[in-house]
Image (spheres, rainbow, N blue to C red):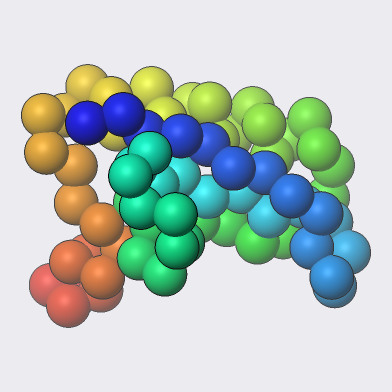
Length: 70
């Protein structure tokens, strides 16, 4: 699986970052998502750190699986 980090400017201000797989073009169930980073640098740094963590797992869980388990 190839994971990708997507960072974009949020409508409410700040930056949004999410991680999804390369084949899923709809970010409706990402592996990770945070939508209120104050700077682009913070969003990229956090996204890259989380991407490295997820890459260490052979089958990382999506957010929906984590919320259902809670």
